[in-house]
Length: 292
Ligand SMILES: [Mn+2]
Image (cartoon, rainbow, N blue to C red):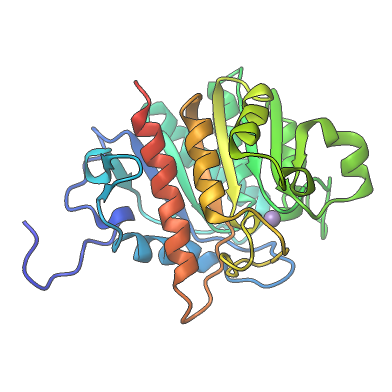
């Protein structure tokens, strides 16, 4: 029972009761932004998402589900390893490995995009056949950036080394090499404009395996709705379209993990934090709609 005038508990969606053993989803907050090259602050992301999520209704009319029945467990924040980005990735990988061993779906809250490398590293030890759906404004495909192979600008270069196939959508800040080397596995933003959501979903499904990991850099969204990112690239995916893409893809795939990264909250502007929290609700809720 919630006491009168008491705030919702501090966890994702402000759930009254949480039980790790019976939970289906393990939420891992990773307040880390060490390799960020432009505006920092993504380390504040997980707390801002959790804070906003505590004020979302449990019930969602769009999905017709109640998130308090979904089995979502929020873990303690993962302490950053400030020695090296590689050390941090290994720490994340170890933690996600424990979640996977427990038969749960890891949901990481970033933090900078680098956290995805750690998650996919753990996933790749469990699954042979899986794809990564990469939703982002940027290609993140540099082999090395600012002296490390584990920078936010290298995420997809590292992930491609670990998974059977990757498919990227929303990209609108790329290099000539990206276009030459990877255009078959990219749905550029310029081509998404004018496509129906159903066709976008179809294209994603055509290019991914059944076991799917989703890494969502929030800068894929339009900066008007999502200004709270370190590297705001104009002309992105609108919230409603993103929501429908997630719903459509997740309904046809076995989701083995997800991360939502790069929220860099702007003090006093809470709407983007809510937006991020609601997208995460949509993603988790859509997994719940699937059988199994
Ligand atoms: Mn990005």
